[in-house]
Amino acid sequence: MYVISLAALKRNTSVLREVKEAAGCRLVLALKGFSCWRTFPAIRDDLDGCCASGLWEAMLARKHFGKQVITYSPAYDAADVAALCEFTHHLDFNSLSQWFRFRESVMAHPRFLNGELHCGLRINPQHSTGHTPLYDPCVAGSRLGVTADQLAGADLTGISGLHIHTLCEQNSDDLETTLAAVDERFGGLLRSGQIRYLNMGGGHWITKPFYDRDRLVRLVRETASRYGVEVWLEPGEAVAIHTGVLRAEVMDVFESAGHRLAILSVSATAHMPDVLEMPYRPDVFLVDSEPGDGRPAVVLEGEHYHPATESGEWIYRLGGPTCLAGDVVGDFAFPRPLLVGDVLVFDDMAHYTMVKTTMFNGVKHPPVALQHPDGTLEIVREFGFGDFENRLA
Image (cartoon, rainbow, N blue to C red; front, side, top):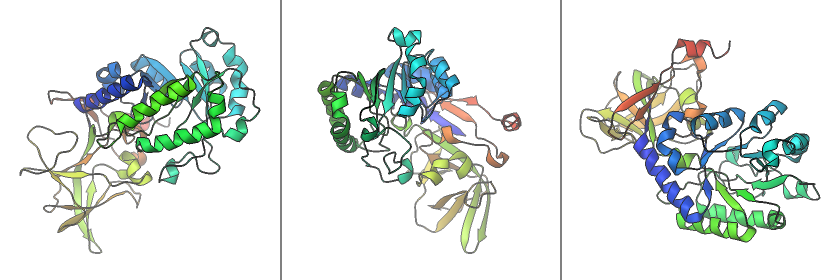
């Protein structure tokens, strides 16, 4: 079961609201990182709206968040653009070819003509700051964003915004060097008076304890003043980080070739895909009857939590119930032998994990629950055979 703490979400968005007010910018939720719309009433007042990666996310934002909708996609088709022009507030394009293809129809739309709809281009500052190539949009040959040389001499009539997104789980020092690269390559355009907004994308770990929020505020204010633009931020992870868990049950334990193995009711590939894609090692807790010294993001009344460690006597390789040989979370040490029926809690599973889940192998999909501030649980979504059956026909 996925369990999301509404109180933890509110703590994060309260921090984000303080930051955006201090910086004088706009801040929206990136639905690609967190889109559990049943939580939106708890956080709507702190944020300016949502950013969407395409039509369906934009429709979700309009229906369930009800504030600003800003949209960027690596590519749109004609039906997408026609639908988005009816309600999105920013429509950002990934390439000049896409913009030129749709410019005439977009600029003729009544919402563009009356100023409700603004269009922008994603730019590539060609400045890598991350450590994982899979998440680096500035690698050579990247399909994401327009480079400065591609813009040279281009007719940018109708464009009033620029969009950068180069960070992933990073501090504001990386934003500072990125903005220097943006100024070097695109500063002339930003100073031309044509550009009205600069979207600095997501990847800002604003709600992490170590994040330098004062520097972020300074950078945003300096950027807005330097170019005369409105600055937008679109974090996803910073909204939902440390707000949710995935609870799993031990289904089987056995030994093979000197390894203790535990098969769980949840799958790494289907229910925690970022564990394999990022990759990263999640924090894991054993729920026990004896007092423990651990505390995941969501704590249930009457439970005790023992954090798993990397070394110890009782090491188990945790795996899922699918046929994929690599459906393994990792090796974790526990304070006692694991037993069938034990409950393990995987921490920090609200962001990105939930939006990427699949029903691979027909494995049962975990239900989704909200923990209200008083500690009570509300199951807001359960999945059955019909959900699996109806996916492909």
